Length: 385
Image 1 (cartoon, rainbow, N blue to C red):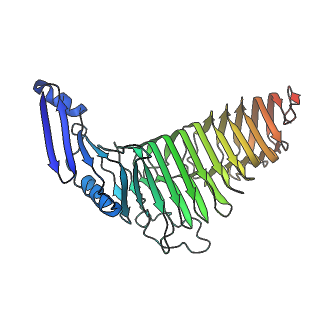
Image 2 (image 1 turned 90 degrees about the vertical axis):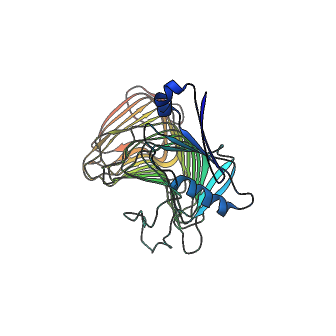
Image 3 (image 1 turned 45 degrees about the horizontal axis):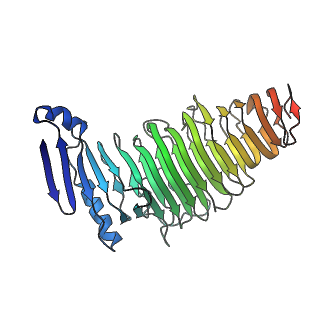
């Protein structure tokens, strides 16, 4: 057995190869492991050690992958961003054990009326961690916090890259505007088994996806819990903007605060050519909108629940009409279960589902309802309650 060992301060690199004759194949499959230890009772020194370990990696490639293994403890990077590196995975010791924390922003308090101060200014809002291609971030917690004068925390930022994010707890709090994950561009970003909480006093978004220089962001979101609470009526669980579109939500639980939106699709730029499919998921808002589409798009809701909303599904596009399919699901809205103006919604298809609360209000749309019942379990074979 051949062993390759490299040592740097508090970092040990070990790769075991089964046979010297298989070195080239094994090196492609067996990453060099860099272990980073916490400095006892010193989160800042621990954060500095982590930053040095990751930035010190050179020569990573498909055939020379690295794994940064972070031990238990708190690693505070302050206003510095932990920049991921291509072909380098970062793995904690569990999201209850390893915490990477920082401000995720170097910009001050947003001005009044500045709804998105981070737009186009990634250098000022870089996130606690910034993604890279061909790399995975997993098994840890990321905490972004605001302080006086720096009040726009972002936990994870990706910009035209496609990292994989898995088994993470993501927390953003203590500022005026919070983002858990904010991504620009990047095709096929996999987000799996995450728990996101955004709780600032003004605006909150658990996951925001926007267009980048490479085009619209495309995210796959599954096995996730996303809470966006505490803002002044501007809480959005998942915000898909400027043509960003997930292929699918599966097993996702989204909660948004008062007058907020569970899922919002906004700013049509000609990129909404896909459909949003929500499967085995739950979306709740405290009197807001469950799903709010300000763009023409096809939405499919399957075996899911949209609840505690004023409007379950709202189409509000002035560009072109959209289409909604609801199958084996519950959509509840105190004012309307489904709502759309004449130009916003062309067809509504509902089958084997419950529409609870207010009526369907879609002037000009063609309604197709089969096997639908209301909150009193009054059954309709062909009409929408």
